Image 1 (spheres, one colour):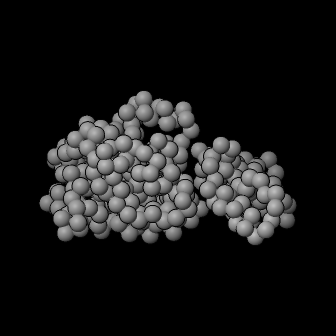
Image 2 (image 1 turned 135 degrees about the vertical axis):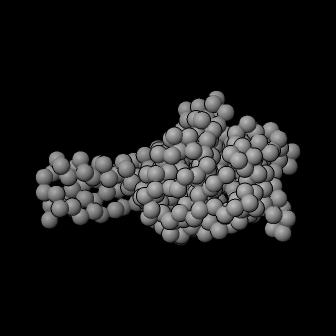
Image 3 (image 1 turned 120 degrees about the vertical axis):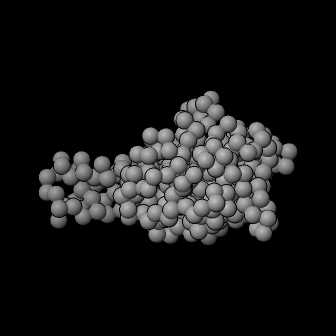
Length: 229
Length: 81
């Protein structure tokens, strides 16, 4: 499997996700600067966390229009799997690859802690190594992770089984208390229509090695390697 | 020509920052504060001198970048130099 990690000015989880990818793939991903206009041949493209362009205007808004994103959008539309983590999720939304918006957290505070997520489905390349409805512990670290979409869009996402993860309690129940940012319907991550583009606010790369205090994020990377080879 | 662009949250979109501002105004002793909504104000200088063309240009700017049409509305005024 070959992977490319897109690096924007202000990305800061690009190296962490590269370490997780390398641990799963046995080879280093390509690090691709945002000013490039092409992505090398890749089985997976990752948009990492961080604060691209200092979150100017809106989180992800400037990065979504950088030269590399034309190429990323084209590849995504042709079926190349794309994973957007945190700021990467914001970029995917601003680029129009995923619906909705990520607004300021309801608490107005930057939230940086472990949260529990329920895996809503396990039939995509990103999540095959999880069980459906499994509860996993993954850290969040964001100020703008409050998922918003109009009711019709939310109903469509649910109807098309496109919610990837929900914030939940230890029993897997998506309660208001378990929701760190006010996201509608406790949504932590969503897929595009074909299940090949995933955006999520939590950081699987931050708990993907026992040395980090947990490994619940690792199956995402091993799933991708298993499916994409 | 100068475009003065105002970007506001759509009705029905919760604005926690606006709520916090309303609360802070109340704490300062301002009575009778109703709903507060926070938005953005952007000025863009344009070389374009034709008003109709400038309007089209500003609308495209707003829809492609300056506003997030999922949650925001925009309004603008053009001012000749």
